[in-house]
Length: 456
Image 1 (cartoon, rainbow, N blue to C red):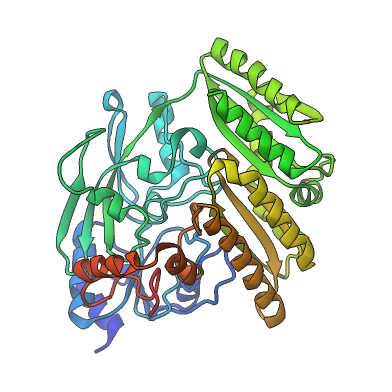
Image 2 (image 1 turned 45 degrees about the horizontal axis):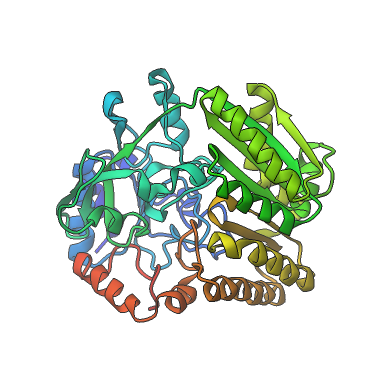
């Protein structure tokens, strides 16, 4: 069997199949993590559903691994083809199929990106709110149940996906969900596939909720003396049921990196980035209530963004924190863990995480979408240095264990992939065996992204 020649015969076009080394290298890793790379044997570029069906029919018949690939922005090794086989690049399936403005929904192919979609929606005065602070493909975001800076108001991808067209491992087409906002009909297969990390099938069409763009926004950067005060302020604001669109935490280590990377001069202190949106009168009313809560918890400065440019500049800071932290040690890789805990456990969880990190003497930072209890610990580590990697893994385990013992989850948005398999078993116990049976039902030959999520 010659994999390249067989796939070439399927496409009859060399532009759809590649074994060029630079292309194989691009698909050997996710571009945001430390996980070791592994070359696929071949990269294919499907352009439509029919192409996907042909590839999966061939791969399933010959028991060849298939790993869908979007923009490669995952952080837990989800797109790394550690069993070789086929990397299926979905970026050419990037059509916006249909928009229904009156129904607040849009249908897209999986290769459409978040930025591309929002640029298209602007003319309809709509937006797609899920923002993981980096551009990503919609298919990839569905695959990992991405969330991000707007999750405090809009939730995660599972709250946006109304329906999907999926090609299963055997080439069969499966349609789940629909165009409705609610249903009490049968098992919720839609949410089964959201967050499945390409282990159950390949998405070829996705129906999403979209929303009116808020008429008015008010954005602030709020300085605190310590992390626990900033975290407590989030709790206090949440209890007041304010029109919060975003509330993000970054610690003093992150601010130090931003100052150097962006040539800024912010105080070296923890900050909350806060945005309220909606009706102007309500937003200003809610801001006064928010300010009371912030002051009660000891904020020492509030800097308002008074126009669109100031607002964009402020959120640009938050969106570039990973690059800023990376720039402090450019020769190293970023290792990141994300956990999510109940809101009342969050201040102590963040405080304990800071203590663990300070004791480690590794360059590290804390940031997160604290409006829903999700925060990240980010480390700069040399992946070739076994001592550093071992120390990172030890701290990562401590952070996850603390989250699990306090009612949390081992991952709020990054997923399991390669990096958190052990923790998923720790969190879910015997229910993992039922997940594996679901995997076997949809993919009996285990060709779909094998060795992800589950132990071998």
